[in-house]
Length: 126
Image (cartoon, rainbow, N blue to C red; front, side, top):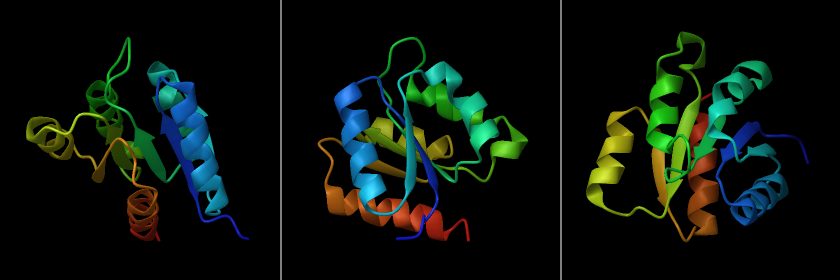
């Protein structure tokens, strides 16, 4: 199976990272993970990821702050950010989209929904 694109997954819970990486790798993506939101910019610049799956609720730096920082870097403007969060309220979803998120997935994750949204984010990169 050919690699369909590079994805970075950011979450502070290791079981979420393992689950998402396994699902994405099984779909043919090259998925990496980190539980350190402060390293995201450096990783995105260095590894040329097309898509970022980003949790909102993390210690030290939340997903909204990471998203805002990403959008302030011109060279990262092509990275599609998909928020994955247990926050299902309309304010969080609207806030993420207003800050430039490509899409929003709520936890618990629907695997089919995840695959469709990641494929959509990748297609837009072609």
